[in-house]
Image (cartoon, rainbow, N blue to C red; front, top):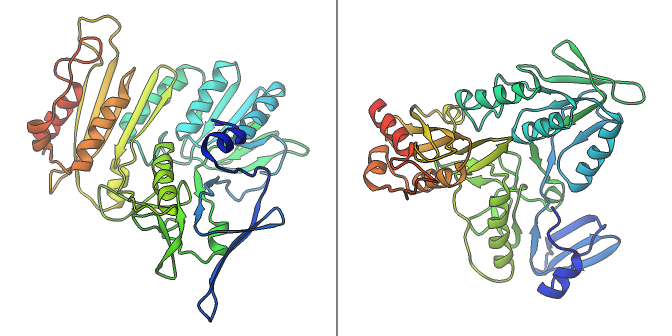
Length: 396
């Protein structure tokens, strides 16, 4: 998204933005006499720095298969990419989308709404894998199917077929005719420049950072290199260990900390629960903390609670169905995750659950300490979140 033109930043914030210029190299080295050499080369010019902030973001992962260089193959990442997709759609009717994450699903519905024949291809057995549980994600798939979107599950895209342009994709031995393919297969940290600087890359393929968002180099803290955005890995607020939080909300918070510290402050960026929400047509799905799949990956035994109710008082007009699922650690009873499927008002509730996770409360403590604001147009007097936690306590 373009929030402001470069001229606005220069006038209002005293920030000089140089566009259409690639950073070709970066140096941060100490000579034998102890002097530091710190500069970047961009567009043939050398820029010395006191502090360097790496905000190189991520790249859409495209699997190493044949045909991905054909005309008609796209990714969803930038404004330019969106414009290119929009233009190519004028001569395309059948679209294959590789990946059933929230970006792929939002795109699938948008294309179905303008009359395109859409097939979503996903290698896992559910949509929104990893961050949502199957019982919460399946209704979203069913909703999209009711809108005409087709799904091919448990099948990776194995090749793109065509001579001068995209003609089909190969997925699990099935040849699916299509005019264009969009890869929405996730984002990987763009660490090319970081590697050149010799910075430490963590087990998740992104940059290791301190709470001050300073980078590490050979295990030592870099006093003058700061990191923010999709290029860095975070600490999980649920269990000690690294996680990725490639969300706009995380990036803004990281940018504030990295920028302030690069200018001499001493702010910190804390562990994350990574709350997310997606609006797909008239459905909202949201989550926070750990899904059952992620908890299993961490080796955590879990217990869940679930409740279905309404987004408004039952007598108030236009109330929408809402389902809330809460996940707790079986041993400690601490809340570690939550998911919501609703026709409206998911964001505030997932933020509420996130606050509880960050506070480290148990399911029993939540029922004692938590409160919800009640107004007939916005909630039931006993919110669905409470009902889900009560079910969780019973199951514990």
